[in-house]
Length: 477
Image (tube, rainbow, N blue to C red; front, side, top):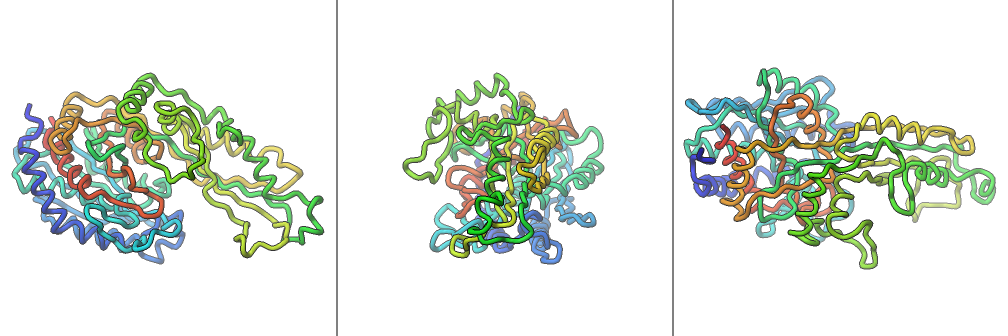
């Protein structure tokens, strides 16, 4: 079977023109919208920025005039909206396989100062790089999904039915996604999508199409320790009233070894299967230091683990803890000699793909809250628990299609990688549709810096990926 009835070069030519003439300006307009995810903008509904972004993207999708395509914004009460674009199968298409293409439109906050000449909400193009918050994570996704389908339509290339779903709560752990998945399930009907294309992942390099075969789960918890009803002069209380910060440190030591970073809660641990050990060895041998990417580390910093596959596995199958926010602590310039009344820390734990996130959450919460030290008031709140993703083996047709698309458009066969981040949608879909195939890919490669300052979209990769998705859709059996 010909994996792509239309030559990839023809699709690539159309996609290149589409991005240059119609996508980059629209994507730049999206970058300008501060559509922060609900966790970072509790007043998102009143502020209206998420709704504004949804309207912009849905209007662009509708403007492509795909034959039979229905684009709509769906809103469930109290939830962020979702965009659904339903594109029917080409008349006479041989495949009955239905494809679900996924992305999200909500954003992370700016996070610190961006370099001179850049602003998180102003798109700046420098050659083949487009800077701005949300450009790569994950604003490009609807342009890639609809762009791939537009390329197939423009070249009279047959394809099966495709449903594009763009949600708006992913950066908060996708708490609003469930009802929209039910909407998609009702639209598609049994047996559900045969292929899921997720456009919210990464790429280890920009020289090939990468497929993510596993992602870690995540657990976000707030830990609050209160010792006083108000601050007291540290000369009076110090040595008598325990420091809330010290008690937070003490509690954190229950779940993490502060010397090694090892997570101490058994429910958060899992061994990687043999196929992931082999994949990590292969990736480390082929890419060397590039397998991990670059970190803006201070020159003297010592990384954990052994170089090579060990560090890849630490990032993808080992749990880890990060303190990602603290309340109750004034800035250095504002800090007076006061023993503060409370400290609240926001904790992010990454969990191995096979760990039950709800069970881990229960274990972590009980470990932190049991027997409060020195009688302090301890409060633990589980903000979000999301299971990781362990992809089923690819069917022969999909493996062949991704390889040939990658070779034709990038110049190298497709690669397989595990990721340390989380895409909650995938675990939900894998549970809902256990027979579905998955192509989990994206543009978050070296220097993209998703969630950090100076987020960047590599435009060459975005165009190539769009054409590659078109090739895969055309190759469905």
